[in-house]
Amino acid sequence: MIDNREVAAILEEVANILEILGDNPYKIRAYRKAAHSICELGEDLEDLWRQGKLHTVDGVGKAIQSKIEEILQTGSLKYHQELLDRVPRGVLRMLDLPGLGPRTVRVIYEHLGITNLNDLLEAAKARKIRELPGLGAKTEYNIKKGIEMLESIGETVTLGTVLPIARDFCTFLSGGEGIEKAELVGSIRRRKPVVHDIDIVVASNEPEMVRQRVARYRNLKDIDETGDAVIRGRISLGFKFEVIVVSPSDFPMALLLTTGSKEHKEIMLRHMQEAGVASGRSEAEIYEKLGMQWIPPELRENRGEIEQAVARRLPLLINQSEIKGDLHIHTDWTDGAHSLEQMVEQARSMGYSYVAVTDHSQSLKISRGLDEKRLHDQLRLIARMNEEMTDFRILSGIEVDIMRDGTLDFPDEVLEKLDIVVASIHSAFHLSPEEQTHRIISAIENPNVDIIGHLTGRLLTRRAGYQVDIEKVIKAASRRGTILEINAHPDRLDISEEVAFEARKQGVKVAINSDAHQAGDMSLIEYGIYNARRGWLQADDVVNTWPLDRLLQYLENKPK
DNA sequence: GCCGTTTTCGGCCCGACTGTTTTCAGTCG
Image (cartoon, rainbow, N blue to C red; front, side, top):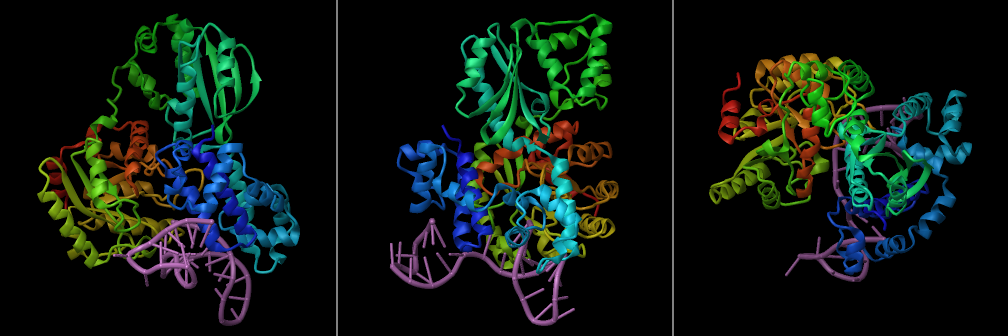
């Protein structure tokens, strides 16, 4: 069985190769679009295929449909293989370097015959890049910096990419004969935003049965190492996994010892030694024997949680069930995929009692940002819809662009009319820390701004955030009652757990928002919750756990 | 290569910024 994302990965790579080869840009876009909609697809591609419905997928026409069928049937695509023969994989890898696009990569490949990052780095050091047509010393420098960055990231992947796959694997294992239980442990259980591999502890008295079960997993790529106690290998998309087999009676202790960070584990081991505790019927019982509260996995990072657990003063962390609304979503009025009505329906189906519609503002042309007239049209629609509902409220809003100079993309008299204003940066990422900080604080100082969206603009494993003096921003937000967003998208998780922790300490409120651009993405709020929990946040710190009247009152009474 | 109450061809989100030039191509969001 082939995963949707493996199909998408092949189509995406076809697009990349065509781009380097200088093929028709619209053809390239078509492959990209198909790959994108397959990734976002709610159902299994193979099911659709069996029902003869592949063509219903957005961006899939005749040609791509037959290519998908070939992948589903044979596991690979001839066209893709032929293209790979023309452009080595190492050349494709160069596209991951920031600032390096297909044209530049092509120039490097054709003139210097470089086919991997190592040779590229050597060439950059030997000052050969600057001699190429259209390239200069700056590009050469950026290549060196870029390769350095890629190497420092290594083989990491966002939790959002790996968690669904890891869960599927773990569920499959737990259904095996002779297997009592299986649970995800390590950094995935701690819900770290970026992880290296999938660790699973399995309770079984028959290691051989576990090995057989692993070997039968449909997304298994290969097994590198197999012993009685541990099985290592790779599954879908090349993710490394480690299955640790323990006897059922050892399972609770194994859970505890494989979940926390290294530092956390060392301290726990000391406590166990001192208390003479070596086992327990459950994780909770082991903590109890140690005279501690049970520590939620997200906190097991040695940031003071053990002391707090001993003192029985651990925070009561926020839960997803406490979220009452989403304060940052997009619709097809701008760059969202679904209508306002569909987005509201999704919010209601998630059990929310309110949602803020925050489409982009006018200057963001690429997203068809709303101008004043269209914003007013949308406000009228929202008012109409609100009249028809008694148990749900749509808050009118905007994600207003913070311009380069710190002014906003709409004048105050427009923003005043809205229930909620999220202000975010979408341009000029490279400003100096002083300018960027001044820019954001200007937005915070505007009394119409309620929430600062994705504060640093970071994209995990891809882009560091822009340089901002976080301390100053938190101080300003605290002064003005401005809310900081935890953008729940697993690629962003912005603000980070560290910033959330600091914000809470200073009394700054947080909103956990999905920033959904399609209905299904509202469920990504899950990752924002994990991030908030890792930042020690409680429900009261998060404004969208509050009932609507409390939220509105807070916004109303912010210092002007 | 996809898509269509502007259907079977001719469009396909667009503007800012960067680095290279000395008027603009390539990259990015």
